[in-house]
Length: 93
Image 1 (cartoon, helix red, strand yellow):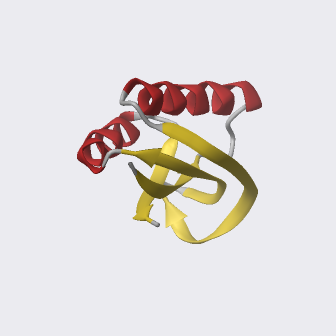
Image 2 (cartoon, one colour; image 1 turned 90 degrees about the vertical axis):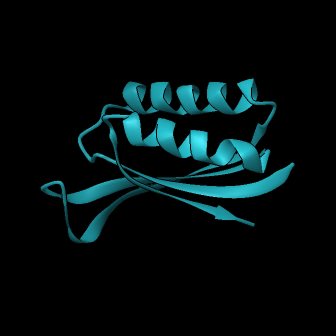
Image 3 (cartoon, one colour; image 1 turned 180 degrees about the horizontal axis):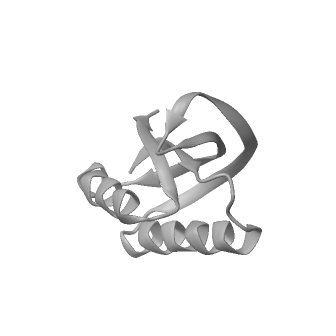
């Protein structure tokens, strides 16, 4: 298993329960692939350097997880399909 850091930028107007649902979807995906989420760090709402999809603010959440490298492309595809996600970045630790 390889450690990864995943930073996700959510739309700023999301309700807390929608963020929790999206987080649980990510956790289910990772656990279904035999991985685990070690840490979830809520960095809060921040002003963006430039507008992304007409939003000037975004809500940042950082996930630290262990997952097989072969499942990363699948994770990126799942994240790109989520409506609430503006951007994401996956980094190998």
